[in-house]
Length: 105
Length: 170
Image (cartoon, rainbow over all chains, first blue to last red; front, side, top):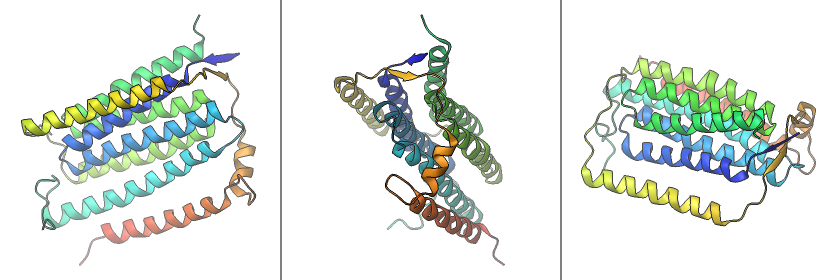
């Protein structure tokens, strides 16, 4: 038994996800919503790694492990970013990017 | 005739596309996090369809189980669960839409003209966990013990860093 799905269909999904993330990153002003958009972009790249590995080089495992390590790094990045955001909120009581301008030159 | 896996794939694909658009356009941030959860579940489904069941399980545990909970907690902690309807300048909105749509069209065009001819993968053949384990602890070519160990150090460092940053000072 085989699955007949063209590799392009996976890539279209990840492209849509990637550009949704980019759109959200440009339009959102809440720091947490920005982080959610970044998650979307990271996931799109992970899908691409796994798909290229499976379709182009099914004997190798590089893409699979890149996705695995990508997930771990994304988890680390999210934890640190949320810690920073909570700290910023605790200090100045604001969460919107427009209000956080202390370090703007 | 579509097989069950193909129907599952297109259902997951539709789910991912719809929910990722909703996640960046909805005006409530708690809803946005929920839609992100559905997108991440769909991504796990795609890994499972590809045959990478271990990766799918990792995706579900780390993302859907861990990160989303973290998001929901921090949304509630920072009291940002109100509305997110901000005034965005018209010029900025036009340029954002232009960037996004033109970029997406460009990438789609490159993908479509690249001439991928591959369209078949075996159904129900999953990557054995034994192979993953051997590749993760081996030191030879195409084996990954060094990145694995570097990753563990990175996770430790960022755990300590997160605690240091977020703790209460008195």
